[in-house]
Image (cartoon, rainbow, N blue to C red; front, side, top):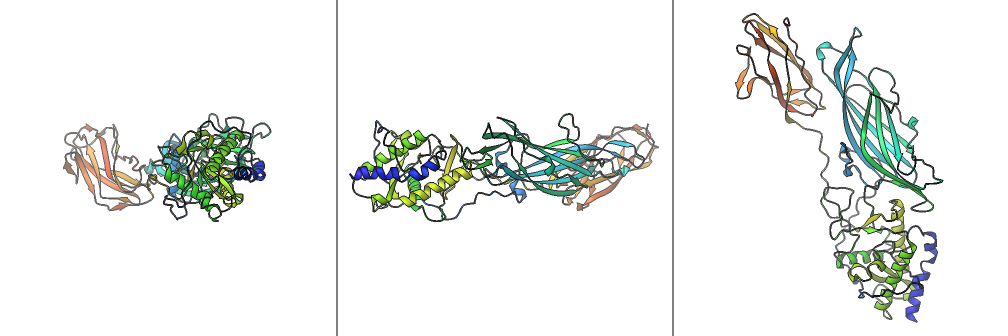
Length: 554
């Protein structure tokens, strides 16, 4: 009679909530059974959880699931040509940066067009973020524009940069729109300027036939430097940069994860159930998992960061994932198998966690909503465990799991992990800091020939421009290599690498002009592979200094 009573209790306790959550995989961590299902052919040995967990749980509250935008440079990771998984903070936030350069033609005061007059560098910082519930995302775009004047002797005007961003989505199942583009304002920047714009955009598709889509996000920046307004032209456009490179998959559903909700996540980040039980309403449900992790090293679901990652879970031995299932037959089979073990383990006497069987449920781990539940591993006794715990405790734990499934949009047959406050693994290295002083050598070549009178001193001006955000740290050296016989650089020194002029300037902010005096023989001559070296604070520096000869060209 007692055994029958226990089984009826498991079934009755889930009837009301299970009817409301068929797609969510049931309620609780695995209470209830289906009396029509046959018993498994082979019973595994019975194992009760201990009264105290041997797993050391970190009492500190782990970082919460952020749904707001990126706040500092450390959040952003370079995309390059392939998606960097560390650009994903979690399933809700993407932080990616890119750097684009382009040569620019500029008109002089007389209206003549000077080709390759300068080089602009545009750094983009994209943050796409927002809660998982709702078919809308927020975006924040920060642009940093710097300009390198390649011909400063001409005193050309620095072009103003106008940028019109466009965000586009391409669905795999059907057409998906990330619009409207009108919400993204045009951005105007002067040299060495910065601007931040924020906007929201809806994710739309034909939900009458498709209720789940995977879309790839693309961003292009259409720009002009002549004062005109940029125009969208996906085909054949010359003034266009694509800063958000790689296939950033955004998965959206309407009524799939939960029949009454809709939302979007980045599935490239792992789904982690942070079972912290902040209200303290499910201590035994949480402890059951802690005991399982302690007693069974190979039990699935334990979370560990993949080495070098910040949002991707490891699948190393001992850290295999759980797999969610929407299949009701599988869920009920898992409950039934777990219930048999509870009945056999406690036919009469109660465990310390339950004083009255009528007020308790048979809880289990892995949960019934996972393919790795009790029925699927019934002949592998080390891979699941059960306990009788208070019904309110079990329902609270199950409700927290269903909230996780909904918030993280965990799909059918999608992997997930459980976090109890004991994350291990090697954290990712932080993004590289803004470049500090480093030894760099830049070269330029002089190929024109000049005729000089014997012993005549000719002066040349070398303009050194620092486009880095901080000062250019000295001292510096200007090298001359492959000098013709008889050619002298006044004030120079001889070294094993060539002839050089020492520049004692401790730091350069902006530009400095370095006069160089050369004494030439009476003959045509040329010298090549001139080098400039120093400690530079930005990898785009130095630009080729202009060579301003004062003398007749031959």
